[in-house]
Amino acid sequence: MTEEKPHILLVEDEIHLARGICFNLEQEGYRVSHVESGEEALERMAYDRFALIILDVMLPGMDGFAVCEKIRTMDSRVPVLILTARTEEGDRITGLEKGADDYLTKPFNLGEFLLRVRGMLRRSAWYRPEPVEEGYRFGDNEVFLLSYRAGTAQGEIDLTDLEVRMLSLFFQKEGEAVTRKELLERVWGYSSDAETRTLDNFIVRLRKYFEPDPANPVYFQTVRGVGYRFSRKSVF
Ligand code: CA
Image 1 (tube, rainbow, N blue to C red):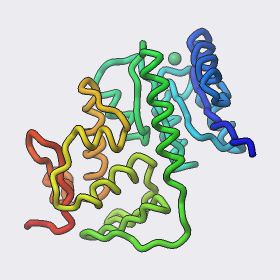
Image 2 (tube, protein in one colour; image 1 turned 180 degrees about the horizontal axis):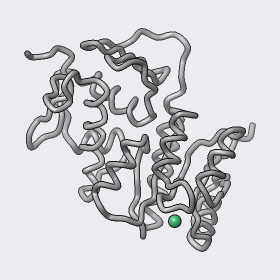
Image 3 (spheres, rainbow, N blue to C red; image 1 turned 180 degrees about the vertical axis):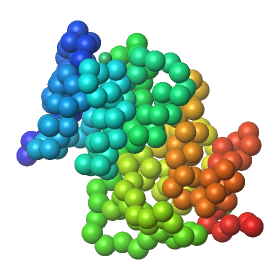
Image 4 (cartoon, rainbow, N blue to C red; image 1 turned 135 degrees about the vertical axis):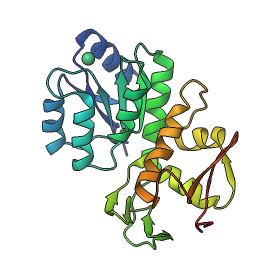
């Protein structure tokens, strides 16, 4: 049996860079489709399934953030890697808020890029949905990890691949402090001191979903100097 090659969608308007990325991904054994705008990407997504979407932020027409938001309304699970030329922290947060799973700042190192791609594809392959499952309850929330959804006080939400991965780690270690290093390694598959803000931004996102008052979290607690702790019981 021949294994199907993971199909990646690259959304990048800089032709020179796009060619380089396509070449290297194909060398790694992936199948790559390349489009130059967000509008084209959304068109492709309407009839094609992708294992990963690599999305540039600065695009003609719709920008990458708007595209990402739209992608999430169409498919909550496909991993999205954002490429940003900007270095401001604000842009990273925006990307993660719009549902991206990870980002790389241009110009990036090719080895690092391929490592991220490999990690993201591997993670999504591990998490195949299964039909029946019991929800994990805390407060007004019920989380269904296998079907990537959750009921919250604000209504039903779809979870992304990385959100599921992070929640599953927290649930396994309920009541224990989980170090930043472990979260980065087990959720993102890498340990990088430079980009650990990704982790904090993700926690902000989880608190927005699940905390009655995100500014005063009771379930996703900060453990100063260590990392984070999930607690099912509110301590107040
Ligand atoms: Ca661009």
